[in-house]
Length: 236
Image 1 (cartoon, rainbow, N blue to C red):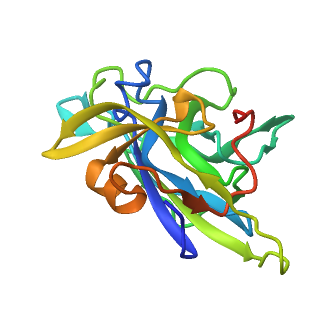
Image 2: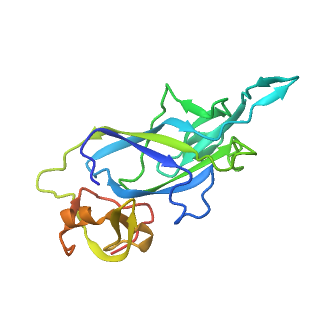
Image 3: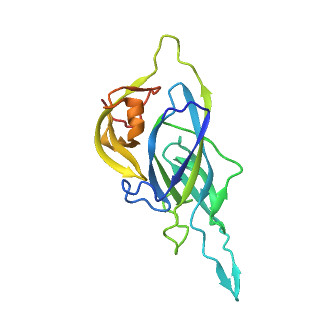
């Protein structure tokens, strides 16, 4: 999916993509995006955390009265997309800090801190929520292990530069083969292996989208304005 506007939102859930990322938990998880997001090579982007929710703490009973638990613990939200920044004496890919738990298990951040995005082609996003010692995974509730954690990320373009005349910054991305098929919510989806990309980047796409974009059988080339691949990307 090529982005032709100046901002967009991505919502992540800790219980998504568990068929692929079986170790996903409420505070450490990876979401595989339904469609690869192409930010393009002629602009720069940044991302910030604008909303999150998690399993709220259990209310306490003190002398027969109910009390809401208000937390005072600093947590860090790590994200693999952002440029490392100074956190204490370390360089970490941290989106922001927050104090938890809140009585409702919800945070709507009025002030969003934006950080540069380090890749232009996004197939998955990894989130890791830790205590402020950077290493211990966080835990929001000792009782509720089923309520998913939700994060809403806001991406915005910071600069748009046109490529010099006569230079074509596009690389071509082509379907190599269809490796699997499934039916989800009544929609037939095919698992696409991208030509020149490792199988870890395979994407589930609606068959109707594939036929509309790539033809039937899929053979046409979809051009993305991409100059670089993911860090440590695969070769053709």
